[in-house]
Length: 150
Image (cartoon, rainbow, N blue to C red; front, side, top):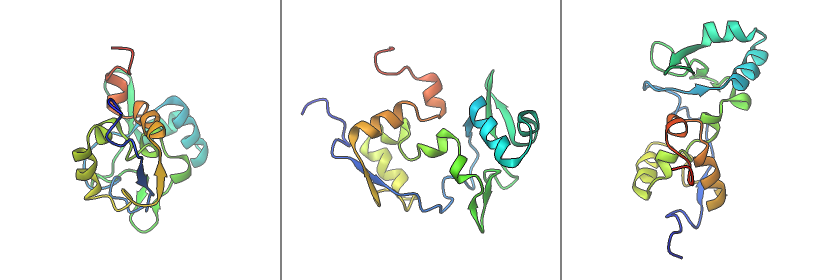
């Protein structure tokens, strides 16, 4: 049907916890007040301690998780994987269904070349992919209008 997304038949993804999306490059993992509260509770510290020790400012009012000096996520351990996997931020939970990744088959294939979980595992239907990508927690969610809000 005309107007259907290129991924109309769905896409497969299963996180292998390889750390490829968590390591070796600078970036931002935006965290909301609610996510900070959950992560602080997990670590047994106050929200303010979490903000001071684990986040940095990006933009006027947004916070991102800090990176280690090698640019890995502050919560990624090469031997054990993500130390907060069950409570990871939305931006981490929605990978690889980020708006910029599902924008085209070419961008999906480019990312899949370095992510062993893409095109494997669970099949996500087109509606699920659309919902995840519209509110993926990334910078694009903050700056791009949602469909109907243009």
